[in-house]
Every structure is written in structure tokens, then in C-alpha cells.
Length: 362
Image (cartoon, rainbow, N blue to C red; front, side):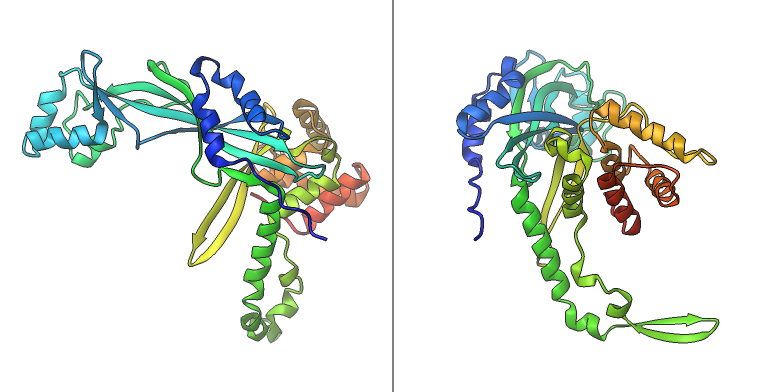
């Protein structure tokens, strides 16, 4: 008997909740407001380091503080007023006091448990945005070389930490891409789509032959003989969750430590699904193997990482992400396990050895 579908929070209602947040208290009120709007869901939130700025919502402001309207429309109108002469536009506005404001933000994820399983949760992808006074409408010291550069001003500093005056916000917005996801449903669809795409190539692969040339002569091997697990392939997204459930990390909720940057798009007429895991808790230093260092030293380092982020076997999942723990460290520890030089809890050792035999990385 199949499980009943999970009723996701309604996107329109989420947007209403976000719109009703009062900027001075929006950060503190976000999770309680979402939880109150959707009975049965208890939301938590987490920011990630994903700075961005929006080119679709710039506003021109005059020297007296009056908003002159949409940036692109204003630039085009002012260019038309001088017959498209870029030099005349620049001379007219380099000292005019006209500036532009733009919205800048960072990603924030909201989560709510929907059941007892590791993947039983809903994830909302949000942006936390502030409107800042970015800079002048022209670069004061250099004439513009194209109208496109006026429309996409790159002479202002854009950094996560800024001293630019804040004009509005913070406000929260639902991201456009994969903004509402039930993770168990996503993983089921990801696995099914992978199976369907591989199955669609069965006839082609049954006829494919690998032609090998060696000093001993040539040899032809059927592709499916050389790749016996082709149709049983498990996507890395699914393996990440399966490995979490199999390991010591399963004592913690996965979304307390990871957010998932979902990719859901169409390519050549086929739906493509994937995600990039985004760590919410990171060690102060990366773990990069040092040539000649002992595996025992590596074990000390991974134990320190687990303690630092507050998650048993957490180093392993940081390793699959690839940045904070180098995959060579995993290979070295797996070799130490096989040689009996080091030990891990049995469940963690099994996960690591399976990974070493068939790697996946993000």
C-alpha cells in the first residue's frame, strides 16, 4: 500500500506570510510565522553563504532623494533624450547626483519535519534581501563604452558585508527555482527518472561493444558485461541520504546540518533532477592529506571535525561535498580500515568502504 502524498505548504500562502513580515523583526519572526500559517508543520530556518544581487529590481533616485523610477527604463529614456550619445549621457549625469538602488541578498532555507524518516521533511528555498544605495548611475571617472554597461552597472562594490546605506528590508522572498520541495518525494522521483533514462537506452547498450587493444592483441567486450550494474545505478543524491540513515550521523536530523540546492530543469526535452548539498556547520579549517602523514593523524583530524560540527561521522558527508574534507583522506582511512590499522564504528566503516569501492562526490 502506497503512502498518502504529503500536502506541501501552498506557495501563494507562503508568499503572503513573507509579505506580512515586519522588516525590523523579520529574521526572528520568519520561522514562527511559517509554523503558525501551516498547522502541523514546525519550521526552522538556516542561512547559507550564497550572496547575490538582483538586476531586475533597480531604482533610480535623484539628488533630492526622490525615486525617479525603474533603472532600465530611466536609462533608456535619458539616452533617448540625448539621441543615444553615450558621451553626452555621461557628461549630463556624472555630477547630476542621480544614483541607483538595488536589492542584494543571501539564501535562506526553511525546513519542517513531515515524518520519522531521514528524508521526511519539506524544504523552502528563500532569499533574504535588503535594498541598498548602490552608487552613481554612471562611473564618474570613465566614459561608458556601451549602453549595455549602463544597464548592468559593474563599477559599484558588491560584497556580502557592505557599508552601503540600507534603504529597505530585510524582506524574504521565495526563490524561483525549486522553492518548495518534499525531500522524500524528490528522491523517489530522482531515482525513478534515472532508472527510466537508463532503461530507455537498453537496446542501444545491448548492442554496444567495447573494443580494447593491448600488447596481447585485441578484445571485444559487450558493454553490459563490462558494466554489470548499469541498470542498478543509484544516484548520488539518493546515496547521500541512504548513507546518512546507515551511519552514526542518523542520530541527528539531516536538515540541521545540510540544506539542498535543488536543480530541476529540462534538457533536450527531458526533466533533469539533482541537488548540491550545502553544509550549515563547517569546521574552521579544511582537511587536506599531507604526504607522509600517518592514518592515525587523519583519524585525530576527523574526530576533531566531528566534535567541532557536533555530528558523529560528519566528516564523511563533508568529504562527499568535496571542499572541507579532501576525498583522498577518505581513501587513506579506508585503506587503514582494510589493513586493520584503524577502526571506525561498524556501521560507519561499512559506509566508508562502500564509498571507496564506488565513489560519489558533489
